Image (cartoon, rainbow, N blue to C red; front, side, top):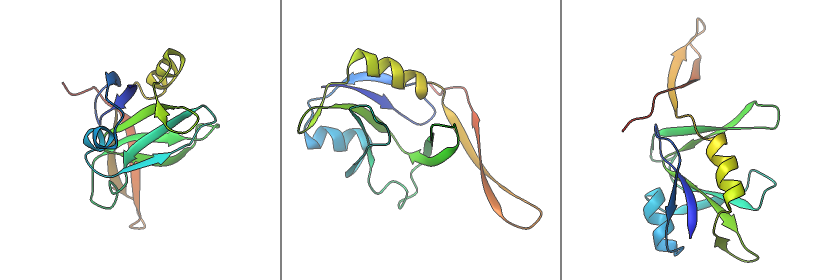
Length: 128
């Protein structure tokens, strides 16, 4: 199964996996969660426990207006959808989501004058 893998601080890459639950779990380093933030026939597969166990921030999800809605942690996959399962990601969607998640991001916290913590996000050079 052809999918797009996005790792923290790295450019997206197309990989082949066998599509089994075990192969998906291996890629995201734990139990999987599938989310469907777009109208396209694709799923974002991430580690279901990633935020609970403190996995590294990876990329920001944005709404249609470009406002951040969530932060994805850890390695995640973009996979295609069939009628009843995950499947190959088409070249059209590989191109679209590679462009969307192309630039690695870095995250840090800043504390304002009132003592509130704010998550800050910026682009970063990929790690080799």
